Amino acid sequence: MVKDNKRKRVRRIAPLAIPGLALLASFVLFFSVAGMVRHAPDPAGLSDVVYKAEITDKFFLSRSGLPSFLDTVTGLSAREPWGRWSDSKEIQFNFKSRLPHKFTLTLLAAHVTQDNINKPFIVQAGTESETFQVSAEQSTASVSFTNVSDAYSIKIVVPQVRSPTPGPGVDPRQLGLGIGWMQISTE
Image (tube, rainbow, N blue to C red; front, side, top):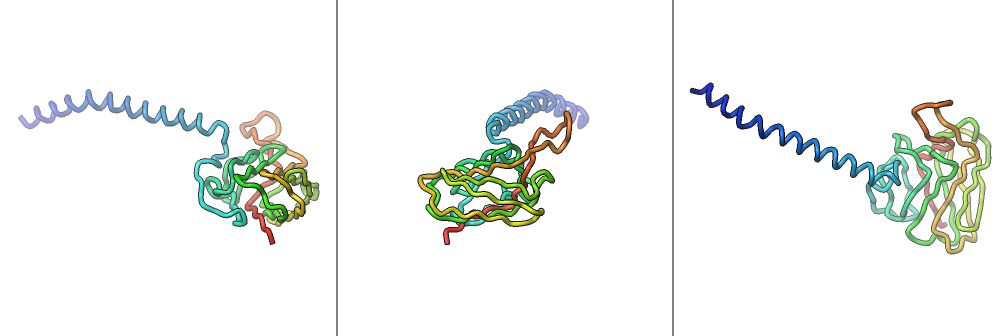
């Protein structure tokens, strides 16, 4: 009698388990597809999370998401433990508010490709442009702007980009500069 009850329970559960599995698979597929669509314009995952920060706070690129003062960031690859690689010729940081008239941008060049050592990186804030060079990995670089007007973005132009896997490979990124953190100071 006990065996029959177990068999009946199994028979009753088994038909429910298959639709449940199908429902679970549909749920996973839906959210996977929804996630891919959501992240298509932001493969680096920078807009996943917004955390509260002031424009003068240090922005660690190894952190998930964006500080609240940034609207969007383009030209950066996925987050790594030390920061993020550039993955195009231009990196652009779009701010929610107008940039200060006078400021200094400092960043940690955590990594740099061999082609870019001691080459000029161009930094643009509005119509103003400055340059910096990176002589070694794990070095800081600073550029000062004294006359920025009506600007909402900072663009960094990378001198040379290259794929980490020469020839046809699995890594399509075009690397140049690995940024650990950046900070704007107004003093």
